[in-house]
Amino acid sequence: MTTHKPASLDFDLFIELFEATPDLAPTDATKGQIKTRLMQRVAQSRDAQFFVFAEQGQWKSINQGIQIKILKSDPQAKSFLLKLAQNTTIPYHDHQKNEETFVIDGEVWLDGIHCKNGDYHFAGVGTFHKEIRTDGGCTLLIKTY
Image 1 (cartoon, helix red, strand yellow):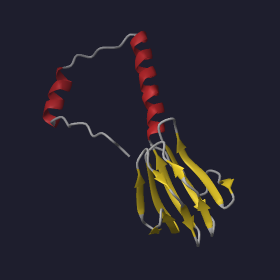
Image 2 (tube, rainbow, N blue to C red):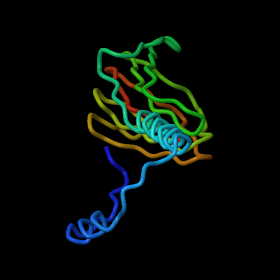
Image 3 (cartoon, rainbow, N blue to C red):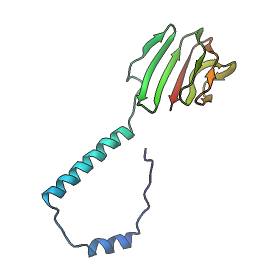
Image 4 (spheres, rainbow, N blue to C red):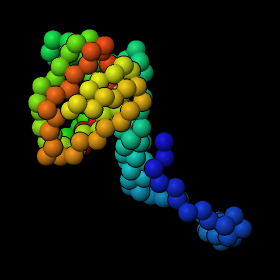
């Protein structure tokens, strides 16, 4: 997934510039610098785009009836799946960061609002949830930032 599309150069202008540029061989030091920068960009691009397939990662039990699977985590943001078993309740909690919740499967009550498969909820930093509960179980995709 590309986040920035560079402006394109007119092809005829590109050819003219290419033909007008003299052949120059970079020094060994310059070659090393180019290689180092290129490898840094390759490493950064690996971090900018990756996949977690359904069979990858581990579900961890964090409380009775609650399992979590971390998808991505860094100091600024976290993305994870939260699976709640039938008749599970998460009590009051406040939000230290913005929190986005998407119901992937099942149904859940967020502060008395019934949310089902495909529904989305945003809770801003400094807000709180009085209670999250599910009768039939659910899977939530949650992102904090």
